[in-house]
Image (cartoon, rainbow, N blue to C red; front, side, top):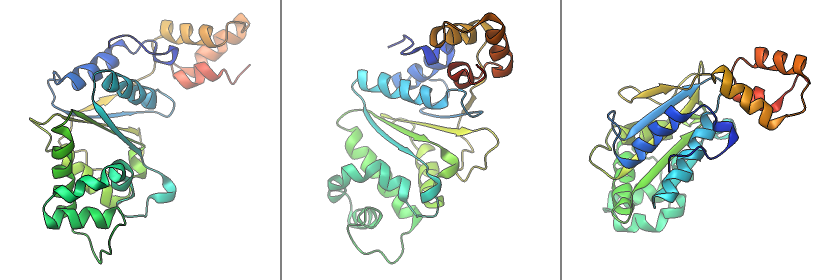
Length: 232
């Protein structure tokens, strides 16, 4: 832990240290963190790095992403996160087990009480985190279905003193169905000039100097623009 895993994370020493402290339980802001920034700035790369760090530390990683096509499907992201652990639901109290069975499509559920589902997810996390610490990662938060957003917001604010870490990311300026109130946030800004130049030179070493200067100016520190070199 502690090294930058790929060229796309050049210049992200502070952010990587932040996620490393979060995973180690040393973050002064607690076990949850919400990342936001413009498209292409590297939020998903930081989530990827956190997953690698967590797995190297022996943590279980549970990951999901919001999807526009499923934004109207209730509990689709909760299903995505926990379906592989569906057999563990049988260890929970009857109402919590039944709620998760409904979320997983294992039983008919006329309606699902968000509070019961939220408590069931907390209980399920307690079961699996008793074996080893857990990292929950949720990307593309604006596309979460509302039911999952309610549950995850509830859970993320109740992880203190548990071996569970929650890390989420969203694009700046997009509406948030996820209630991040009370959660620490970190803006992921553009790269400084030198890391941006190093990234461009690493990915495209043969770019002519005038084009290189133009790319750096127009990319304005956005890693995906530096890496893709669209203006060649």
